[in-house]
Length: 402
View 1 (cartoon, rainbow, N blue to C red):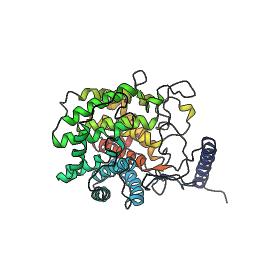
View 2: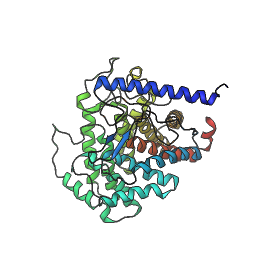
View 3: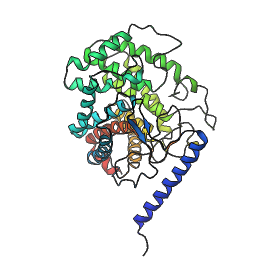
């Protein structure tokens, strides 16, 4: 009896996964880093893993319609929520996921995901991480402020205000910028911006603007319109001779820009700086999008990275979709980029809801296998889904374009 076409497709899919896993093992052996191992936070919570056989891919529509986008979001959110709902964490990896879960609750009108984040906030008594000036430990404040906006209660932001007021008294050290790595521009500035929005105190916006300009002056490449991950990469180059620009690192920046713009007053004189940065980066990443709709971990040398990376790609889709929805980016130019990007992301969802091809925690383009998934990648995906969902609601014709 001849195998059906469907069975043949699955077999080829599994063979492709096996090849990727074997390649990943080879690279792990030569680099000394194992992409298949579990990753955990410093306090033991599971950040992500990469099973050898993640199973078959899901059959989910990639249409940009409320129904299809909601189905993809729900599948991924349910899978991830079940894995972390009883393991609260203040880690930046989880902070990103919590923001995605809150966005999903609002988008899908389902309180279940928000309840998970609410439990986390109460577990930690609305306190930030232990390192007082470190952006990673401030990231969870984004969720606290989201919940505060829904139900204002001073205890929900008291710890943030107290800590940030202390930070304001610390003079800048030119040799040690506060946000010295580009990821920090997603972790901290949105917390400061939302605190300013909720308290109507501009001193927090002054702080953002000063520190953002310092980081930008250090890491921004005015020719490529992209960010180096940190100062150690300023003179690092890919095999093709171009500078190393990490996909997720630049995704962090674009996601941070969107979050700041979301909470910065429309009339604020500082706003044009962030709008222009988003537009410049959008133009750069648009030109680097792969034929499959996604971006490679090393943006400037796609040939050296044949496989897509979903966490960086999800942040790009999130930021571009936000820009289109809010009139910051031209819809005719960037709408198709968002559509292709969303379709690419959906194609990496497995039957159980796992979002694959997510590079583990790192600081540069790295090694990973097809089933690799991490909480921050899921958070980015859910943020992207919420923006794509909102865009599709106001543009019902989009569903017919695929």
